[in-house]
Length: 344
Ligand SMILES: [Zn+2]
Ligand SMILES: [Zn+2]
Image (cartoon, rainbow, N blue to C red; front, side, top):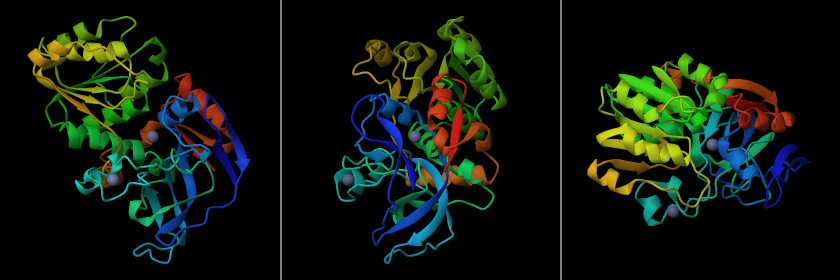
């Protein structure tokens, strides 16, 4: 089968290769991949700015159909429509796993990052990581459940966004746009999103379509002044940081109200970022660093999408055959896309 393989450490070093179909272990299933979504992390891996363990097939945001079931697997059958969590390798016995957060286990080697992923026709994985994909959710939408679950984990479970609150999101990339949709679903009274002049085309347009009350082009407007103006001088209840930009991370401390929260999802790609530490103390801010997704968030994301409460179809701007992975990467890097789906 054909697969997009990251074959070495360093920048680039990705190509389509002919690889053998994976063999499953007794507790695993083989999934025929129907759709796989390109993630910002895949771009970070391309640029050698994210942990990864080559050689491995890329792709961790996917949906498909079970085509083989291991001997010990119960409750799953050939033909079942599924999506899979990516926390392969989590040990299950360390303090972090036992306390209910196996997605943060140090031993984790995620699908498409630490082991072979889904930029191909078939992917093998443990049955315990599967979630059922309802009939009314198309496979391409199934492929964006993973990033949606990350946003649900971060925004709803970790930073406890509540109905009636005000929110600003920094960065209108895929995670920023999904965060926006989740904020709308949660019933916020006000939500804005920041970006740059290069986002005026596709991404701000998408943000408005998803219901943003306002957008801020930081190349033209001071985001702090604008946020204070929109909140009668108070600042927002919650800031969702998805840009990874050092200026946005610094300014967050002035956009959030006293006793407000920052939900940090975006990776900066740098070793250090300066922050106005004392201002955080005097305002008694809460800063939630977020990583990966919980089992419960997957179930919530799937239900919200299946019941029509979260318009995940709208995250998708492009669909391409797997062979065009380079074009997909380019569309994302040139800010012309939100979510790009590859079809093997
Ligand atoms: Zn991802
Ligand atoms: Zn563990």
